[in-house]
Amino acid sequence: MMQNEIALDYLLEGFIDDALIDQCRGITVNAFVQDNRKARSGNLFIAHQGYNTHGLLYAQDAVAKGVSVVLWDGDVENRSEILDSISNKVLCIQCDNLKFKVGSIASRYYEQPSLSLNVIGVTGTDGKTSIAHFLAQCLDAHDVHCGILGTLGNGFINDLHPTGLTTVDAWLVQKTLADIQQAGAKHVVMEVSSHGLDQGRVNGVAFTTAVLSNLAVDHLDYHGTLENYAAAKRRLFYTPGLSSAVINLDDEFGKKLAKEVRENVCVWGYSLEKDVSKFADCADYFVYAKEIKPFDRGTHLSVSTPKGECCFDIPLLGRFNVSNALAVLSTLLISQFSLENATSSLTAVRSVDGRVEIIAEDNKPVVVVDYAHTEQGIAAVGRSMRDHFNGKIWCVFGCGGDRDRSKRPLMAKAVEAFAEKIIVTTDNPRHEDPQSIIDEVVTGFTSMDRVEVILDRRQAIDIAISNAQPGDVVLLAGKGHETSQIVGDVHIAFDDRRVAREFLTARESGVLA
Image (cartoon, rainbow, N blue to C red):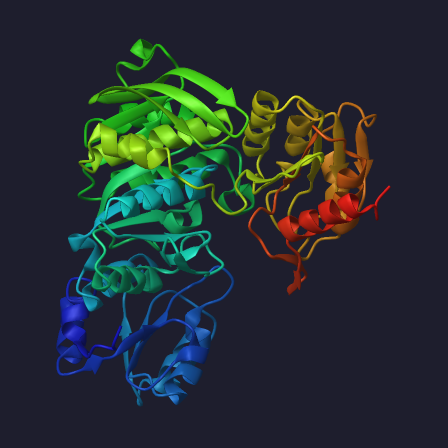
């Protein structure tokens, strides 16, 4: 997208005191920037309190690089000195609650791209990426070009640009929406993280439909309590202008949320239960599975919807993926798809990178790579292995460092419930000692009889694959699509899928015992 010269008073009207608007007249800016290292001439520099530091601390460098305006709020040590040093060079404007206004300001800059798109927001602890990608695949399949923003990258389903975040910052959200809209898309599916909601990164986005997959314990290192985490997720469903909500009624939080928001939006509830009469006060419409039959590489479904009943197969494993498929089906029907087109699209979906990704070869154990990194997520994947395979289940997993510590023993408890062989290993230790993380994980086991601790993840995968028998399943959980292991601040190349294929090949050639 070309840079636009936009009048500053237009961008800020209604967001700052009226008395300050006159100072903005006659001034234009050509881009937003929040990173002083990327500052250029004519930019508007945004300076507010971030997670670790305040943007004003970098304002002097941004001004030296040519920014035209510094928009700031909040308190920081030496604030007066910093402002005094730059106010004679550029316009400095105070904007209260700036962090939560950036998205709406950026939306104006990019001519409010979400207003001309069907924007579907997907939130929840587990399943966001799968639901978002299945939706984008289905929408694209019927010539209604669909953009996507999420964990695996932003852009289009076959042309994603990784960002490292589920929900990028507010300015980049709007820029990406504008790029997608200019490329001719009619729909956008966006994964919306609890961090993104709490920090206002999706403010200014005109969502039409909001989807909830579930709520489980996660990110308490950031939110502090499960109640705060739930409150962040809830915000998506109170977005001004939202017309419909698709909510998992098999989830306790989902049921409560559905009852709450029915006064404001049309609620479609989806469920794996055959009898949805108990959900009568939760939703306006229901999509539910009347029959679920697993087979080797997929699942047969009989489903009831407001547009009729249908039977179809999905090439996906696990009841959790059935739930994901019902969320997608509901959303497609809301998006004016016929039942026939919606179900035919679902029969052709492809599994998402690192989400129950199967690596299978004749006369070898089956390897399944999955991103599951919560108690609920790994339990769901484990149960699906039982539904689709008859052999022993091996599980190789760990927990990330600098993340919610409370879930570590819970993960162990969940794995112990389904796996015959368990190897606890290193995930992304970041700034924590890997052994200390593992020590916290193993406190969740009731017995260590089936458990082995192998610190080196590569060695752990090697031992699992070399010892598992044909017909067994080796579940590599926690990293999924990731192609590196984070140790300190260093990203070391590591891909569970590549390593698994390497050891499967070695096993075939006789290198392994």
